[in-house]
Length: 94
Image (cartoon, rainbow, N blue to C red):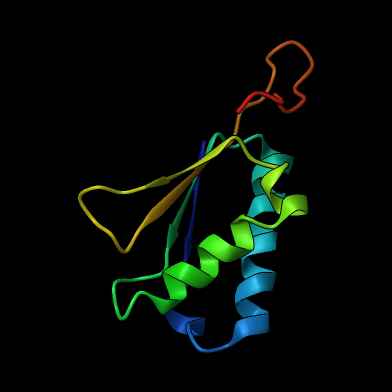
């Protein structure tokens, strides 16, 4: 399952961006989605940097497996999640 979050509509609302990012991560965990696509857009790159700083926080970083920057479209990021099949719990490997 793949989830998608487009941040274009709230690009200048810092608290809403954090809330939206946390919401999509919580939803991915709840639904056991293995991939979340985040679209900060190309622009100046400031929003993408904000997203990466959010994802790099210790309490957030432990919730996902890895972040991938799209090589073809630098206005897009992918967050990968790993879940153990038998129990449905998140994997701890990085």
